[in-house]
Length: 446
Image (cartoon, rainbow, N blue to C red; front, top):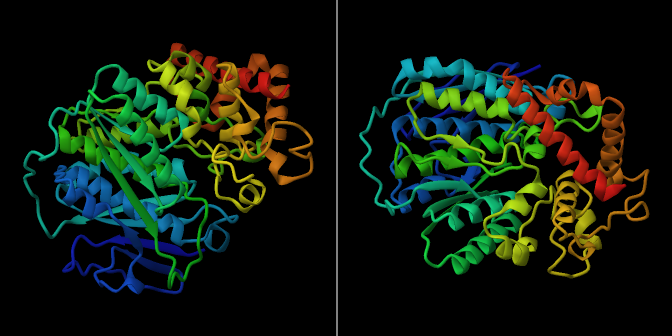
């Protein structure tokens, strides 16, 4: 099993390197060479930070550098080819930093966060940053911004941003996409709708793109992209910190998806995403605290189901009118979906993946569900028992049956996706949102 050394180089004169062996390989991020064939990442991150006059602290910049490195390496090293049991890889991240003491205090939680998120074994190695510290001046962007929110293009983030604007806040929204495709178009479309609806509010937009370059990649393309969320959060923290040390970052996601309890025993582990799992966010908050980064990470919907988010939104008429402009689908551009799509602008979601099923259940809870909005309808004939497209549908049915049978063990069941806070009241809230969320799904598929 090979070890992969992920080496972030701070600038063109940073020549730090590790000698390669048969069992130890190196990926340099970014390459000091300007030729496209030597780049490991195609992105607009540095350009947009400069263009928008963002000036984050040294520690935030380093946190972003680490996230960029993790995200890039994650997709340049195939799990099938290099992972233990075709999954867990051994990766060492070499990061230049200004304040070694701060990062040494944050190191253990940062490694734990990466291990939990990706299912790999990560080690962080620190070295003194050659470029030295800088004293950031106040960013030249609008100083009235009081909140920053991630905007994925999904229904949860659409509701989250709507609620902030309807509450009277001037905000910045942060999007992230791989290319100028479906995600980017969805995020742009939603921002335009929000701008038209909330004309008296300030909305600053930061749409980042980052795509690892597979050209000349020697270690196999990895499609799972489990580390995407740490880059998304790091981009959000970069924007929030540039507006002020006390500006919070909102990550709107419903409690059922956040907990992401495996539907079957075969899905236990990081094959199930952990983007906003409470344990992951707790570890990230510890990292930021140890680095002296005061921007808080907030998920205001941790104890809400998706249906409850729709029901309780502060912009009910707006969401009711435009909810179909959001895309919750795990694979809106898959071959399965594109072949069957009926040339309809309404059919943005496949209708059969886990996020789509939870979305449909929530919309039914709010009396808004309609089959015309999905490529596949929610029935046995559309989602055959033996076909892959019926896999998540079947898994939900199995999970609901098991939930009814093992209700006294619900607390243990909720802990299957990862540790949760020890406070009894918090655990009961997590159990409650899981139970209510699954009831929404049951009412859809029964």
